[in-house]
Amino acid sequence: MYRHLLVPIDNTDLSTVTIGRAVEFARSIGARITFFHAASDPTSSLRGEAEIVRLTSPDDYSYNFEGRARELLTKAESAARAQGVPCASATMVSDSPYTAIVGAARSEGCDLIFMASHGRRSTLGMMLGSQTLKVLINSEIPVLVSAMADPPAPAQAIATIRDEHRSLAAVLHAWLHILKPGNEGEAAPDPILMQAMVHYIQEFPVALHHPKEEEYLFRKLRERTSSLNPELDELERQHVRDEEMVRDLAIVVEQYAEGSKSAQDIEKAVAAYAKFMWEHMGREEGVILPEAQRYLTEADWSEINAAFSENRDPRFGGETEAEFRHLFSRIVNLAKTDR
Image: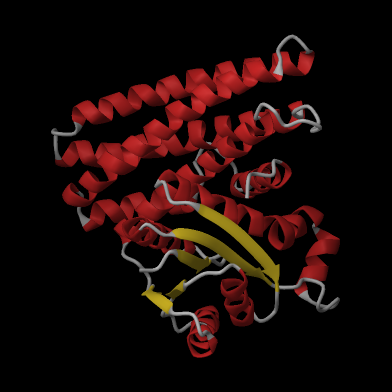
């Protein structure tokens, strides 16, 4: 049986579904995963879009052409860790994705390439489909293709919820890494970076993600069945507790910045919060999402998917999504995680 999968991912929304399927498959056969992203070379043409973006919007350039790969791979690693699947990641700048994928599988010692075929007729879809076909033709390593025509609303909504969970998990993993005891010779944890982490958690998972879960997913479940009310009540209590714990984290970080708390104090608080949140997200994904698939209708899922796919809330302005993308990218790129 296969022991080491190479899973190429791109920056499309369907990659979240691909990652979920790959992780489930790897767990079922006891394999490990190397996630791989082939990034195009933005400097290949000085007259191209990349150079225009670099000159007119340096932040967008940094995100789209430098930070995005690390973000994609960090969230993929978080998805695997959540299921107990050993993983690593790699990236390469290449204008020939299929060549990079085959080369990465060979150099990483993988015995299976797990790929998605998007199955679309759009220009982007045809390009991605052609890369999958080229890998199939040119790889001496077996290739497993997961058909990925546009998934139904339930699959899209669940993938988005899990992806937002993975974003939080990635930030927590990065935070624990920079606080890990015994990192001799490393500089003291940066208080500004940790303040950015607190801000991200306060403004995205706490203020945006949780309210959407309660307003759309939990409310729809309560309308369809009362059997889950005790579980939903407990999860909503945990949302309140989450807000309290993050508020306490913010205080500890401010005290660290002022010199009255140590890195060990923060590590203890972050570890407790991470344990709480991993159990909370595991409860949602292990209990609520499977039951939602049982009870909710297509119309319910369409409403939920529409709410989550917007990735913003009426209380926030239109720039909120871009702000959180840049902040998340900055966090995972500055707080280098274990590879």
